[in-house]
Image (cartoon, rainbow, N blue to C red; front, side):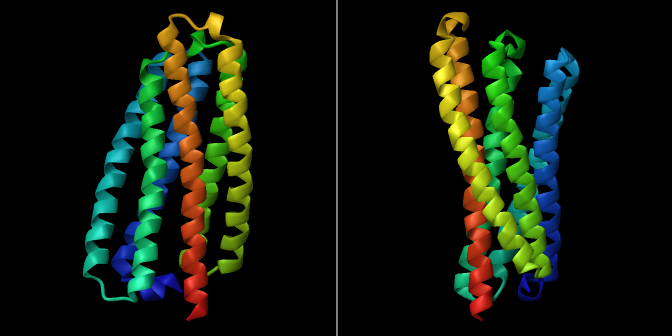
Length: 219
């Protein structure tokens, strides 16, 4: 099991890291719900909290990398594990970018059909992120069959997210005359892009979880 390959300290930090990823996506999702309820102040507080959690997650990531560099394990395994951490970090980065967009976008002024599309995309990202966290946790525990099933689910969710992304871009064209000022259309496009990239990052993380499982199974 991975926890038998890696030092206990790295395993412990990895568990804390994925907990922070889950906290980040949940805070982001709650902010969207609050915006829809016109509880703007509370939504901004959630986004601010998201940034704080992201800062802590970044500290944990740096500690994991520092310890990993000092650890003597199979170089190929170490490289795959390092890439997994990088992909998990990309999920955080894109949620961070989306959070920044939300702090400046007058969300309720976006046409309702576009908002629904964005929220469908967010729903997929929440699902994919939660499954990434579960897949990492099950991989740590050696529950490889469960992890593989979760990886397959992540891939399916990412494909759904791709389709929603295309639909959302079409809606931006359809409702262009309702997006005033025109800079609002740019901000909404950027938000949609950030969300789509977060979905891609989930799939990339899933690919590296699979690489770790396959690599360990060979040994």
